[in-house]
Image (cartoon, rainbow, N blue to C red; front, side, top):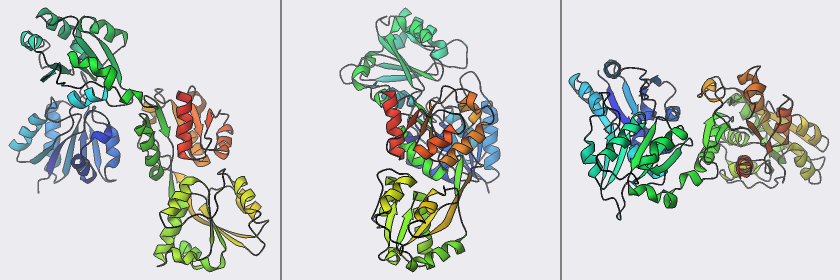
Length: 499
């Protein structure tokens, strides 16, 4: 049975501008064939067994010729696979989607097109430039600046007379010729113009000039592909309508070293504030056997207190509780202590309000909080990670009986979705965040023996004193430690530094 190909537009750069339907197909695909301009972070939403194939198509440097891409799509489809052909922008706006569709039709392969937000509109929007405006631009024209011939085969005489907005895609290499031709045929040299690099991403840069000075300004700013060229009066609205570059973390590249499951929440917060979250899931949590967890649940009646130290600990505890066909009523009069706001919020999802939570989210603060509340007759259950410090058990055992129950362990993540050679060794990071000692250990191991050299100039941000101590043990300096030992505290520390 022949498979099906979905030609999917990935939008201008920001992964969250992907359509719901496009994202649905990414999660279902057997194979994703993607271009340079498609945000490769979208690949992280694919199922584990999905094959990903990079075919390049960067300006002036195609990893795979278009004819070979066509052949690849047909070959994969005839293997009965469901394929997503992921393209930057929209497949039918200078994306050669129509050509691929024609070939698939000729070969008897079913295909469907899922539109994306073209950079000609979405990219301008993120630069604060509306493509139309009632007062000055009632039309717009989207033009390719990169044609088959080395000479631009465009009707510049007609383009120069248009009062609407002109947007050139893939035209930065021909910028000088474009500007010269438009002015040659009557376009005013004082026409507002702009170049937008990597639109809608934290790498976005914008140069605004009048038409006759645009080439010099672009060279000075070292503007390169992929860039949009926009010419018209609408450029003047940028000073009023720019929003993206005003975000507090705009342009900052921040490495998130949490476990994959927890990394996404921090990454989302960073990106909502305009930063680029580089997810590096160097650890993952591994639950202990269900039988052992059942033993813990069956012993609940003997405990007077339960101390939760992490969100993972909460989730695994209640998973075991439900597996044993019990619910939160089984906790009865047991007192609950939570370390950290995130742990407390996690308990709330199960209908549990923590009785105690220390102001400082470290073991020493827990002992200070509980020492006047415990008696020798109390019995504490401490479900937590195998990698946790001994301090809590040692100190609390001086006050009452404590049963430490290992519910999970953190181990190195074998399948890392980022290329450290690309990100770290080329200096493409501003901050590295650490939320636990184990993330420090595994990140340093990942970098190798030259870790100090690699991290030179990069600011290290720690969630709290224990993690800071682990960073220092490697001879590294902690640039910022969260005042509040939470992920929000980490973000606040970075924002304060940027200010």
